[in-house]
Image (cartoon, rainbow, N blue to C red; front, side):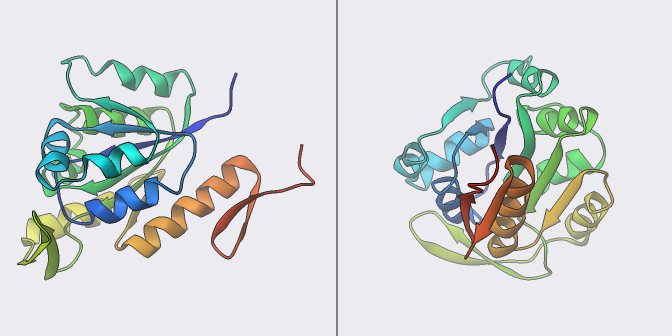
Length: 195
């Protein structure tokens, strides 16, 4: 069996989408999964070239059966990252719904004990978020949104991060643990002593 990979799902939010794509450009061996809304938002924000610059295989939510989730049962992935994750996706995951590609990926990751790392869009009572055409807007998440994020923090094999620095740090730690890598100034370096 070939080495396990990272799965990264993107939902339909512009909040830290640019930064998520930038992190993806620094990684290797990743499969990207786009919700229907994510595919629309990437076009709307003008980020298609950033997505393509990652060089990763991209799967889009175009079928009712969400066939790519079978890859979790085949042992293809060691980690699932969902970033950015909309309040809709977070709510569905917090209550066990798996009716879309991304929520189904999260459910299957949990069922196969594949660790999930989530960056939820709504993590504080007040946020600044990027809107299309480089415009910033103030966002005030509802109490229910914050409660759903808090609920996911108690899920097994799940890490919820609250900013991009934490996301990158947790991903790098996970990659180091899964691939016998060590970190040097935040950069992946193959351990020359490991076979």
